[in-house]
Length: 278
Image (tube, rainbow, N blue to C red; front, side, top):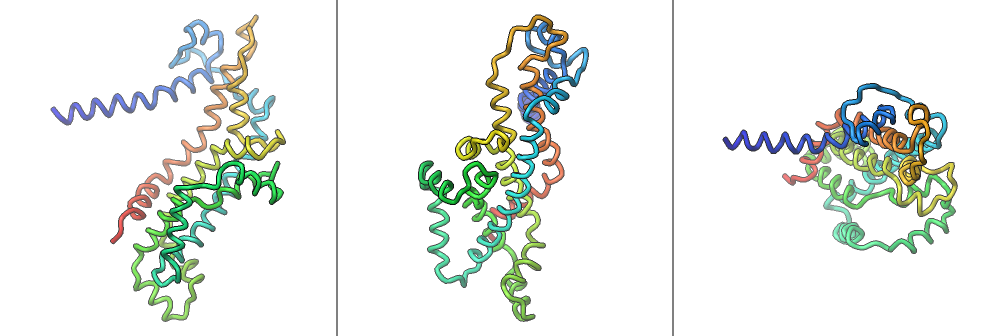
């Protein structure tokens, strides 16, 4: 009886999660005349059209914003992982002089920040305004991810490090040839955090970028979502704002949805290994 109740609750929760996605996808591929006939609500379209997607990628700023976001995501994630690993590895070594102080400083940045205005002044003084690097470098390292990776490194057997040092390997070579290959689950986990953050980049873009050609995907989609729908004289032939909005939401969400299943097992394993000391 208890199992039945649990399955029912999980089923309802699953439907609640899938329902908004089905609605968005359905509206994006349904002729707007059919959407109007159904009072603006439709889950299973009777006819399918990809006109919204065609117009989205040919007559809007989406293609350019898409490539800007791809660049930010790929380059930013690589920089994030490299800097996070270089910071987490020495912090995982108990012999590091001043280790406790450095750890305290990392934790301190999780609790307090310099504020929006000081951060803006730093970005401006570095000449990053109206540059894609303004959406990458200010968040090059996340303190939480440093601590997760440090915890993972600490779980690696100390005998491996001692053996490598006896063979004459220095710390950088140990990190590159020993630690990194053993840390793939942790790197994929943290890489997913960074990747999703860059893909959803919005706040830094509106703060530091005024050049519309450098707007990432989320900023352009926000502009589409803010457009007011114009009165339609011919719903069969005209493409309303709402259909474009739904198509843009699907376009922004689909890459993450496609990539996540391939790294899900590494994501779960990385979270467990990075959170248990022993």
